[in-house]
Length: 130
Image (spheres, rainbow, N blue to C red):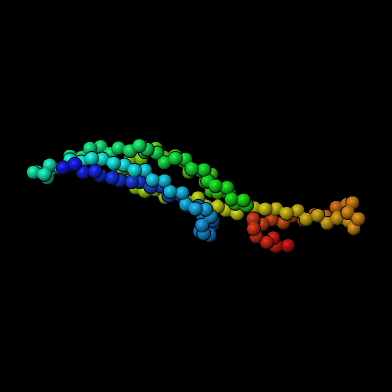
């Protein structure tokens, strides 16, 4: 008797902010493997063929851009040579708020001269304490 055996290996990429909340939808890639096995119905012996697949490589995935944030990984690299019995993979890309700087210029009443300046810093999307 011939049996069709199947396995799959997945890689999930999570995109999160520093607080753990979701930044972008996950990217999931699944590789599918198949092999045939022959069962001797008299002896019960099983003869397994080698696993086959059309694709044994997880593709490189470039991390999406989010305005005001920087990803800790600009890309998740390709992984080749994946085997049918490999464990599923999970990757996480964390987005951190960009540092921002504001320059405050105090000008004369007629606007023709800068009297003094202040510089303040903060993070994207946050109020600056001034």
